[in-house]
Amino acid sequence: MAVGPRVLEAAGLARPGRRSRLREWWEQEHIFGYGLIVPAVVLLVTLVGFPFGMAIWFSLSDYWVGSPGGFVGVANYRAILGNETFRQTVQNSFVFTGIALTLKIVLGVWLAMLLARNLSFKRVIRGIVLLPFVIPTALSTLAWLWMFDSLYSVVNWTAIRLHLINAPGPNWLGQSTYAMAAVITVNVWRGLPFFAIVVLAGLMTVPREYLEAAEVDGANSWRRFWHVTLPLIRPVLAVVILFSTVFTFADFNIVQVLTRGGPINTTHLFATLAYQVGLQGGNLGQGAAISLFIFPLLAMVVFFQLRYVRQE
Amino acid sequence: MALAGSRGVRIRSNIFAYANLAPYIFFVLFPFYFMVVTSFKSNAELYNLKSIPFWIQSGVVTDHYALLFQKTDFVTWMRNSLLVAIVATTVSVAISILAGYSLARLRFRGAASFGTAIFITYLVPPTLLFLPLSQVVVWLGVSDSISGLMLIYPTFLVPFCTWLLMGYFRTIPREVEECALVDGATRMQTLSKIVLPMAVPGIICAALFSFTLCWNEFTYALTFISQSAHKTAVVGVTSDLIRGDIYFWGSLMAGALLASIPIVIIYVLFLDYYVSGLTAGAVKG
Figure 1 (tube, each protein chain N blue to C red):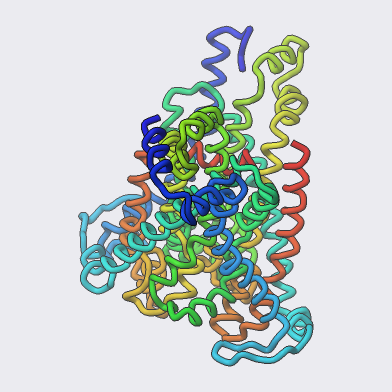
Figure 2: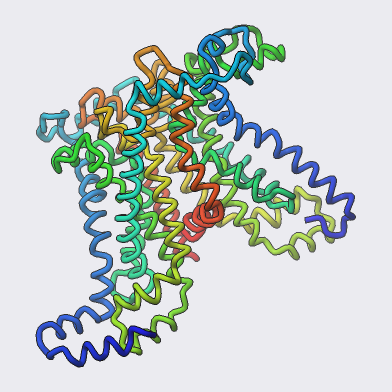
């Protein structure tokens, strides 16, 4: 250790004054420990904790952009709960999260099982699979916006040529059910790689012997998956599901680029509605109240996640 | 997974895997392919319902790229994205190294609770905080500027990087540090000269993820910035090439493609880091 002697020398030369006492104080494990986390704590308290408190204050006041308002109690919550658009948004959020998450879980596990095989070009295939997760979502969603165009949709063009549908085909982003399907499709397209790659890492930890023993016992591949693989990857799967629940529920990019919540608010999620009401409409109070509806789900996920970590 | 099975069985099951993967890979890649095709197609062909959308029939044109560079602030957007990503990443990784090392290695009261707090902030989605933060940047005088983004991005980068680095620091044997301390190195020297060199893979991983997250960030960049010259690439392309009801599809796709390329390059070069970071971030949770 080249630094050692030099430091001792320096310490020896230093007069036993304030400086060395300060150094001694700083060298204590707990002082040093607290010292190192100060920047992170300051950042997170001022720019995460404090804004969170502000969000709660906004939601309880009639705060508009440019005009700080006074305390109004639960008036904002009462207003949004009585609002048809908000109730539609609640329904959208659960439909969106429920369907997208189910598809990501089922397809993600399936994809991970396929990727776990010893295929040639394994690295290339994994690289491709992860691509939608890495590319800026707002930009790749633009490609989907173009693919779902009302007039030039390549999806419809293909389906019409293959005689699967009659011309002109659905207006993907202009009809509520189709728009929801489109938004879910893009979310699954983007989120599936995360599931697949993390579950794949979990699959790698499943001991081969277990599967071999099950096969010798005459278990078919479905039973081997259900009774051996699945219980062993359950912890990993649980973590991915919890993560994805929060980020799907709080999604903003895909809906904002694809539909902006339309048609007639049928694809609005809490985040996009909060953006529309709070920033475009300037009603920060109501906007904050809307975005805070993401919080109960977040709290639940944190609770389960922490309980799971403690069990480890 | 085929053990007693013969070579034939294994080959058959691999063919089954390829056959299943092929449609999925098509699904993954098609939007990107379609971006490329659209960006090089003439408007006449693009908006002709009789032409085949899958490839270019009437010649490759670069008009859409020309429009992007001549009629929009595309170059400025790219520069803004780069600046924001580099500054925010550097700051965040530095803060996270300190915090990650402290929480993973040093024993002091409350270390575990701080770790938990970091983890909770890691889960907080930007969409929960963007309204109050839009006011905070106004108060701090950094609204509508890239400095605002440089200031706010560490709020989601630091929790992520700290969490990731804590995992890496835990894998470094404690004895190495203890040796250095016994030899008279200060704690700071031990961290910078002994521990950091051993944690380089983790630091690269954290920096790569931070850079990608900054470059791709949409919610804050959209809500804090309104002047075109201050936009990041992702927001500039998605907002300035749509004027009312008019979509410049060719240029939109050209912009989306070019603004994705820096990330694709980094991704191709460091694929393994991405995979390990992704699984570490979630699995070690």
